[in-house]
Image 1 (cartoon, one colour):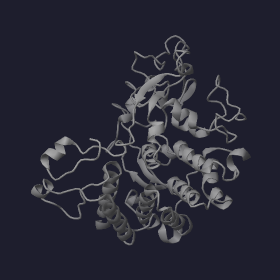
Image 2: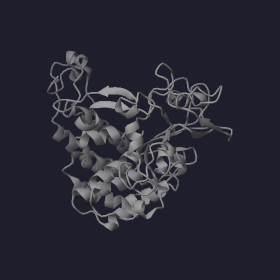
Image 3: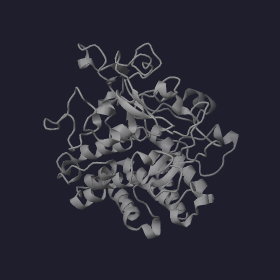
Image 4: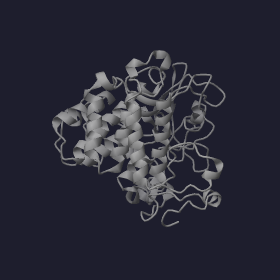
Amino acid sequence: MKAEVRFIRAFHHFNLMKWWGDVPLLRQDITPDEAKTIARTPKAEVLTFILEELDAVAAVLPTNTAYSDADNGRITKGAALALKARALLYEGNRMAEAAAICEELINNQAQNGTYSLVPSYSNLFSNQNVNRKNNETILALQYVPSLRTWGDYIDFAPISAGARSNNLSPTQELVNSYIMLNGRPITHAASGYDEANPYTNRDPRLRATIVYDGYQWENPNGSTQTIYIKPGTAPAGQAANEYSPAGQGTATGYYWRKYWDPNSTAPGFSSGLNIYLIRYAEVLLMYAEAKQALGEMTQDVWDKTIRVIRERAGFTDPGAINYPGNTGMTELIRNERRAEFAMEGIRIDDIRRWRIAEDVLNGWAHGAKYGDPSTDNGYLRVQLRQFDPNKHYLWPVPPSERALNKNLSQNNGY
């Protein structure tokens, strides 16, 4: 239990460090008076503390196979190692260390825990897997149906499925990132992409993640309904999901599918599904990214990582699953992470650690092609974003905190 608490403390420090850089390092409990005087610790020292803590607890924590089903959800040795790999990968200059930890998790499962991919990507986020002990879960936020639940989905789902509004709409940029079944991006001349039928022959993870116009939504009773989103296309009485700039429905022309729980209860779509924090697919893609950064990407690495992830997703075309050589491999791996972990909270960290925010978080975020044809080819302008690389890679220390503690310094530019 002490090791589990130390893991949580390290995880919190890691998340704080990602957003603020230098943060107060708390090695022990502090008094209220000390909280008003403690200064920020340099990021490098905080990182060293995190890595040393994860090493220490990994030596103590049981593996996932050592826990009984009744202890499903407890923190494991594998979780400590995977979090350490993530922390090292995010630094960008410690890829060899990150790769070595991933190799341990992939190749030495007798010592570190048994992990594998759940056979179905879509079922991975359903009650068939997420609340049961499965080998893809390395760390998940635990919920219990009817006892400890979350209700956010009431603002994510299609309105006709029982949602009250929509405030988390996938963007057109995310939809565009899903490759074709032949492995090519939609921008490739030979991809076969048809803008008039944009959701045909796409990465199966698109359907498992995002609800688009014409989507066949599965109701809790086993029946289905067609989700009409394009304005003016719904039959009489079925227009609740249509895009409208004045409505409560989707702002982008898309709804959220991932984590839909048909067993959720009223009121508020109360769901008992666990939320993944770290899963084995991330270990595989961290390994692929680290090996590519080291100049060590090979067919063997590809087959152990991206190939098996794509096969699990439902790809069968050789163009998607066979090793393509290393041309464009860095971008391919980055896009694979985007598709695999969409809506799971990882993308923003990737954008920041790759230092691409000034490119992808500047300008308009778009929605489906339901707008003025003379503006952005008809793709909805949904949100104007601005990112200043000179300061926005770190958050400002809140003035309310600095008013309580005069020793807290401020990040540059604020």
